[in-house]
Length: 409
Image 1 (tube, rainbow, N blue to C red):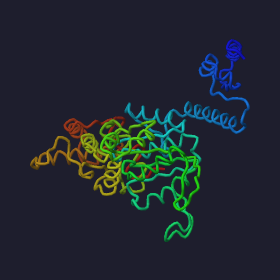
Image 2: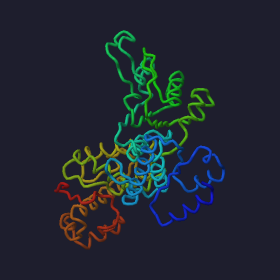
Image 3: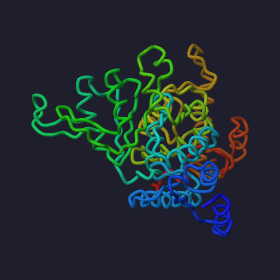
């Protein structure tokens, strides 16, 4: 078939909007430059005669899977993490979720970087969930938590009798994750000798159990993560450059919490929802002062620290709302060396009492005035004095759909 005939066939298929074309040619036609360009521009892939049934079955399966995922993305534009949609006002998070969708469609190694506690494993699990391997295992391994002398047997397994105490065959992390995703967290902590072993596996897709001599093929996708600068580690000879280039084919960066402070209210409410069974009785939510303190904090532990502080605060808080002192955070613009001032303390207590009462009364001013034992006129004056918004629909960072003496359904 020459180039012109091939283009005529393509033109006759223009009405097939959802068609996916696979080119099948003899090897001599496949190497002709004009035909190759036309095939590359218009076809999904290119196979030669004679056709291998396994190859064509795999290709068709992959096409159907990609179309299924495309339909899923169109009908569910928001990414789900642990069954919950990712809601963010941060452009970096939007770029990250879009990248996760894209890299999930291929089996290429991915390197995820970011500070400790930013959610690198969450990103890796999302990649696995949206990939063709979602029905296979997801194995997360912290490379810094495994003793050096056990690493080879833990990763590659061992045969019975290979050393004292090896009374039966053991399958390692890599082999047990066949047809799934292996997530290697803190890859920068891997010793140099294990880096060599991992590099060999990545290049050959085979493992040898300790004490064995058989090369075992393993179909595993590897995702790695680290909080250190691997380029500096390569320059300092603590990380192999060949391994770095092998794992860093696709690169995702997870932003720190202080880079996405606009998401604090959403993240905080999500954390409170997830741990609602730990709440103190009559717990309502987070006060505006506590939220302001959270915005002014630098969050060195990122989301992991946010979860820790909120869980502790919701259990130990002495009032219906979380206060800055419950989070063990300084008040906004307050110096550690600033002397105590009785007027400031009195104003804070007064404002906190009014805010809590308003929430309890569902922002009904008359009800709040009665509970406070003051007139509506006095309450309006205090609202103006403390700059408290009396409208229910303004962001007060209280829990949604949660009233003081009720439990969420």
